[in-house]
Length: 75
Image (cartoon, rainbow, N blue to C red; front, side, top):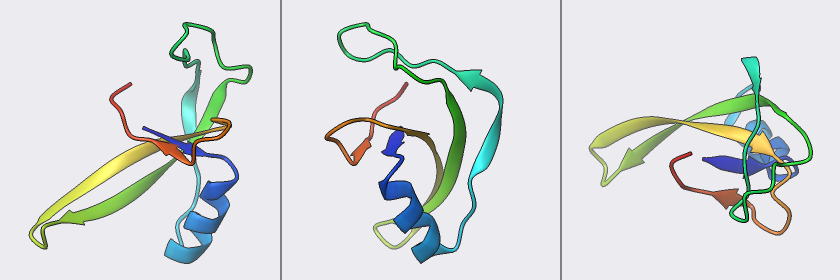
């Protein structure tokens, strides 16, 4: 899962969470198989509640994903 680097600042401020440094930089391929121009170095962890009973923690990598705010997909 990816979150846009411009949106993540708003999310982190609102939810009072911090960026987490990745142990190793990650390279992600776009749908057309080109590599992102920059390596991904940080992520955030979000706690979600679904249907008021199931809690889930998701990891979202921070990247400039152009005109998308977030991409919810298995990487």
